[in-house]
Length: 317
Image (tube, rainbow, N blue to C red; front, top):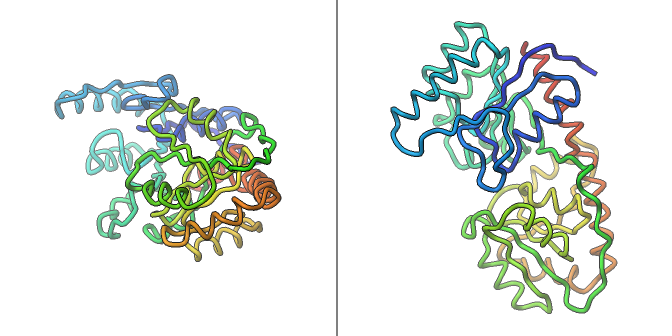
């Protein structure tokens, strides 16, 4: 395994717990990694090493806190691992300072920060020593990304849930944003099928997990080119997943990881017909659930993701 003797600071957001997962996995491998956040996430209030707790209002007041943080943590850091297109202070100032002080940096894009944006709007990506995207679908927006590193899960915390045979399967849909995830189409499709539907929205993550562990079928989203973390967690619990997927990204993923993507691809127009076989066949649900768990172990195991990050760090240090 590649070893990295560097102090790595992940910052400044912890969307879907990504940064916190990464620093803990890296620490388990002996890397000096910490997470700095502007504010903790609402449903993940304790996931940080350094909380700047920025003033909620007042650009100058916020900047004062951010510049003090840069002055404090710049001497303590060899590599800055940024997320979501954000830096500690404005990019046009942050990046020259890192260059002048010979600090390394990478930008880890998470989805909404690049989706549907023209490349000209992402020109700043060239100022980092490396760029990471989370799926092959995202290379549509950042075609010159250094690496594709899928989101990782600590699979020790995800015990597969044995499937239950029942007359009316339970469909679970957990949208972070009702409009963006196509929730009304999910509701409409389920109304045409002999199923029960649980829409999990605006609740703490732990409660959401307990509700989708009860699912027989999970529907992720119907508008994006690729699935989100909810789908990965669902597969970790051995749940069959239905979502919208880009066919070319599926091909690239299967080629890169040597495994079939066991997700049922659907659109808002064919969701009913894609759900129907799953509703009618317990065996199909069971098989896809098992295949989903095996896929997550191969592609999304946090331990493997940490190894990949360490390789990338080593290549730029």
